[in-house]
Amino acid sequence: MGTATARRPSVLRMAGGGVHFDGLKAVDDVSIEVRSGQVVGLIGPNGSGKTTTLNLLSGMLRASAGTIRLDDVDLTSMSMRKRVRLGVVRTFQSGRVFARLTVLENVEAAALGSGLGRRRARALAAGIIDELGLRPDADRRAESLTAGRIRITAIARALACRPRFLLLDEPAAGQNESEAVSLIRSIRGFAQDRDCGVLLVEHDMAVVMQTCDHLHVLDSGRTVAEGAPADVRRDPRVIEIYFGKRH
Amino acid sequence: MKMFASSSRSAQTPILLVCLGLLTALVGATAGLTVGRVAMVTLISLVFVIGQSTFTGNSGVMSFGHVAFMAIGAYTTAYLTIPVPLKGVLFAELPHSLRFLAHVHAPFIPAVLLSGLAALVLGLVTAPVVARLSGLQSGIATLALLVVVYNVLNSWTAVTRGSSSMIGIPRNTTTWLAFAFVVAAVIVSWAYKKSRSGLQLQASREDYWAAVASGVAVGRHRAVAWILSAFLCGVSGSLYAGFLMSFNVNAFFLSATFAFTVMIVIGGYLSLSGAVVGAVAVSVLQEFLRRLQDGEFTGGSALPAGLADLLLAAVLLIVLIKAPLGLMGVRELRLPGRRRSQRAEAAKGAAGAEGEVRAPV
Ligand SMILES: Nc1ncnc2c1ncn2[C@@H]1O[C@H](COP(=O)(O)OP(=O)(O)OP(=O)(O)O)[C@@H](O)[C@H]1O
Ligand SMILES: [Mg+2]
Image (cartoon, rainbow over all chains, first blue to last red; front, side, top):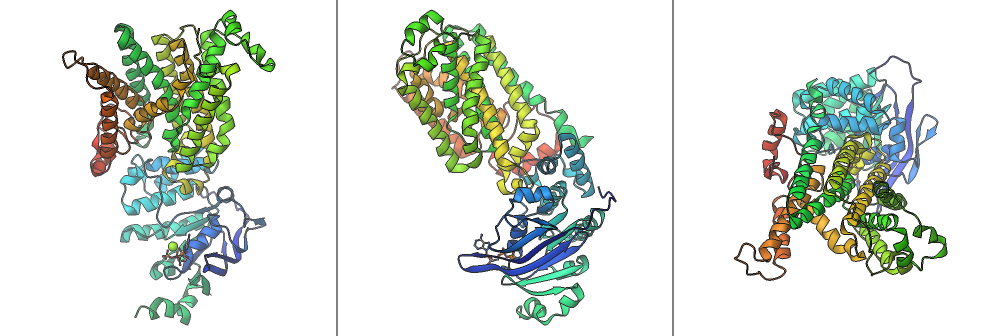
């Protein structure tokens, strides 16, 4: 996998990105940047626009304002599939595996989708399945797995697309404690070994704190804070959002 | 390693499907005229449903238009095999640009393949539309294809004889020839299912957006499957023409579409085995019901007309309620094995729709 061929460090960047649904500004003037090898956390309360931001970056939604670029390439109006081919790959908050295909087929289909030939797709899929500990389930249909394993299958599938930027929407949801811990460790591993940039949407502050190099906090579609995790945690607006409103 | 066990064992399914076809052919070759005829129609239906399933099973997109491909195949075969002198009489009013059609002639097997190719061309022309549609839209669009082709065949009298029958087609379709094409269709369809394109198309069947998010060019793979299935359905139309010797445009319209849809839906429209099992099961059932209606089991007194259709509809409803994905669900036929994972799965899915019916082997 993580061949040490030093690729030129890349940047995936959304500048002033925005989209609205019937007047609701789901994402409003958000600028966010991920560099290869970096894990950026995207946090915020329910409905704050995290998934919508991922939708904009991945091309599932077209931005009505702002630009999205991968280095010199303008992605703003590029189709989702073309972005995948350039290495911008996302997972879904709800998993969305290919339910009635086996785990191996799930991962292999993605490897084929990203343009590999049959044999290389097989080899890549087998490697990723081993890497994520999915081997015992490789020949089982995805729908028969536990929620946690389904998540991991979805991540395996994203890795099979050979991402340069990996956009993960709450990957630890539905995982039990130990699964979550090892997943977090793997996410750091993806960034380091694959020199891949990771944008991690996550609710759990503790998880975010130990995983991310940089944090970006959204509330009601707007950026309320960003910076190093330790600083963001001390930001009064973040404290209010995360701890103030609860009581 | 163990991980790839499923692929090494996957030749089981096509072999079992061919065995079902062989059984049908053996019955046809040894039984009397009536049963022989039923067996022949079953074999030809098998080629058709295998063709349609190549598209619907992998894409999950239902089609009501494949009979149009069958029609193109049948008409092409008529043109290629009716003796030239007879064609001069039948098609005296061919437009000038199509005059050459009165003189073309081909031996049967090339004619079958050319008929498949003619249907493939129609598939090629319609593929861009099919590639873009799903769900209800594609149901309507494929039905529109059927209606358009039917109307053209019905109205273009100078070329198609309109509503008059095509006659004088030599009988070339033998039981064993039909069986040979069943074998070929199983191989082609299975190979497609296991191909790169087939796997990606199945991924899009399971979740369209997740497939796109994995880089899958869904439209392209849909088009490939559509064109391949057009070819196979064209072949079945050709075999049908070579069996009937004369046919009418009405043979390729709604009632045929309904009959094939029943086979595919009862068997399970998401799997190749489903199409094959459905075609055989429905053919047997229909013959049984026909005999029932004719009074064969009630001491010779015929039962009310329409009873057979009514009972067939009832069976369809029961299957749809009990197993919405048909007898096979997304499963393929396999010998009962010691596959732990499969069994665990079956136990887990027992509450679900597909766990209900075991493969009849
Ligand atoms: N397709 C859509 N149509 C209309 N409104 C939408 C759509 N998608 C999202 N929204 C709205 O946009 C806002 C942001 O939603 P989004 O899913 O991005 O939030 P989120 O931060 O991912 O929340 P969660 O933590 O619950 O996943 C919400 O108010 C949501 O209701
Ligand atoms: Mg979300």
